[in-house]
Amino acid sequence: MTKARSHERPLGRRKGWPVSDRPACDFLLTGAGELVTVASAAPDLGVLTGAALAARDGRIIWIGDESRVTSEVKTDDDTTVVDAGGLAVLPGFVDAHTHAVFAGDRSAEYAARLRGASYLEIMAGGGGIAETVRATRAAPPDELAALARRRFDSFLRHGTTTIETKTGYGLSLEAERACLEAAKVEHPLRRIHTLLSAHAVPPEFAGRADAYVDLVCDEILPALAGEAEFCDVFCDEGAFTVEQARRVLTRAREFGLGLKIHAEQLARTGGAQLAAELGCMSADHLERATADDCRALAATGVTAVLLPGTSYTLRMPYAPARALLDAGVEIALATDFNPGSSYCENLQMAISLACQEGGLTPDEALRAATLGGAAAIGRRADLGSLEVGKACDLIILETESHRELPYHYGVNRVAAVVAGGRVVVHEGTVLDEQEHEHEHEPDGAECGCGCQTDETER
Ligand code: NIG
Ligand code: FE
Image (cartoon, rainbow, N blue to C red):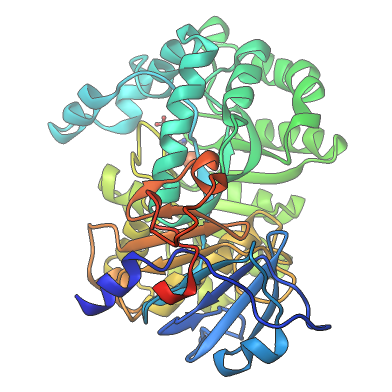
């Protein structure tokens, strides 16, 4: 309780230290009970005690012993100083696989599955992804953007500072473009955009999957490739074949897109081997991957994105995380947030499931949710760990130990979130830009967002 109370007031600014040649920071974190850097080789998470962290223009410029802050870093009146009050500080989560833009409601499908209907049966009957496509196509742009913004708030509140987000519920050039635009709504959550136009065969192409693949290759990718970083294909039973996936991904590569694939989820169809053949950035799902698949991914440096929330929701096998790690594959943990197979923005839940059901240790799961996620989106150099030069994206937990994350499950353990060197979540609330920029009371009184201006308050 003492710790929690001490954390209630410290987010804010205080007057600076003496001016010198020391690098100037505009953000300073002190008081971390542990600073989990994820900056050392596995299995070590590089946990520092007594460390502080400084940033400027959204990038970390200094990490060192807190006793050295005043002699090594310069602050001024505009420096935001955050005292973590003895709590654990981690890199912001990187959720490398989400389908965050869609409209509609599939709770009835969920209930039908609990009564015994399978995901593939629902899909074959015109439900599933097709149901969401109908609702998404019918939604006006401002509704799609509002839905996206609300979900982005939720990701951020749960400690995720970067998501990869896919199109795939439009399935026509115009509707895919609308999904991409909604995904780009202004918001402090960092987003990496993926074209998943080959997510399902839309109803107007029923029975003509190859003709739809032509549309994707000849019209959708050429028009939208410049708006995204990656291309993905749902390569599976009931979706696209390996040959169709190869066509889409080969075409995407011509436009300079990085490649991703939904592979070996519902059935083993060969998507993992295709990922190895094409040198995909990531192969995602892999619930049915074999030892051979693990070796092929390891040999070609493809990151495996594991989505335990999907196995939980669909009551299907979990991906062979231990076999992937033993084979030398880098793994990422992601939510697969989507309205069908994993309706959850909380990566803490995926961490817990990966430990409880998927065979990972708490430290392995935490690495996979941060640095692993960064690897899966090709951003290992600037995201996913706390190192000088990287983005200042941080989570302050409600606890003094990061090990509590998988153990104390099903609740949000995040007390505050910093994205790009700015406090964006405090006490469960996403702060908007205005709240940060407002003028503080001259007498040092605490303002509505918990900031303070006078160091005597500390
Ligand atoms: O990753 N596998 C394909 N796509 C999603 C599910 C999409 C949906 O059911 O709406 C997934 O599980
Ligand atoms: Fe997915």
